[in-house]
Image (cartoon, rainbow, N blue to C red):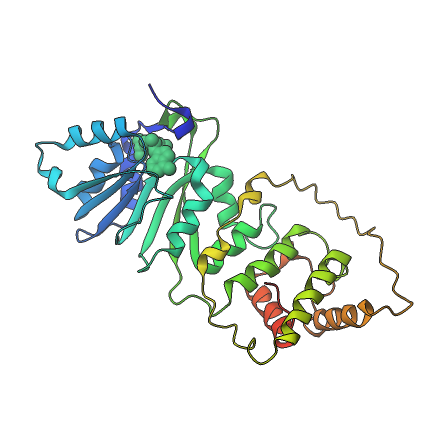
Length: 324
Ligand code: SAM
């Protein structure tokens, strides 16, 4: 019997398994990481294609079944099984990752892989269709979101294959897609905490103009607080470029539960009235000035590219405005 809570949906279509292995471009010298091997249908083809397979499996019964399946075969010394939660174990070196994963770990696993060092060549992973579509979404697409921007900052992602429910036993409730993820080498030189801070603000209201996002009182007061703290520390705080912690981008939990985007755009936000010139208004003028400088005031995050966001962040940082 299979464990629903462990996302156990076994690939039962051998042609599909062959296609996944073919499309992943495995070399005979490759050390392959597999996550959630289950009963080993994919594992077997990976062992045939590469030099060795390291398989991380949570369920001890599956580990036993897998080990038995290859016992006494020439494959047994090419296979190393690690029993444990892939999100908790230290991953060893690998060249390529090929996996049909439990969908509930999609986001943390993707960022764990992208933070892994040394950088691997590529990962070919089965995801829930909707998650896959978010990964590959481009500016202007409905599913374009923080997950798209953050994963695409760190990697090139392409959609390889649509996979229907009936290729699995038991069939899951959702359709699936196989995606290829190739880490960027080198990574763009950006402070990931800063990047994540900006992207969170912008995608909180992705269909609003940046002018309206940055006029929110809560946003202005957060940025002003950061600004004043940094001014007070001035001198020691200029060197922020060293922050290259990829894992800063990993928490995208809200992306999968995002509200359905009805495309409506309400710009009816109540503006704070600071005609009286309280000390917030200078700061607000500074922020809006930066948006105007890059022609961002009327732009919406849902339509902005990664390059746009990198430029926007650099304008803010140059003016001493920080997001972390
Ligand atoms: N790869 C097999 C196949 O395609 O037939 C099975 C895929 S099944 C969708 C997911 C597998 O991942 C199950 O064997 C399950 O026990 C395992 N699993 C679930 N959570 C895991 C975790 N956190 N770490 C490692 N393996 C996990």
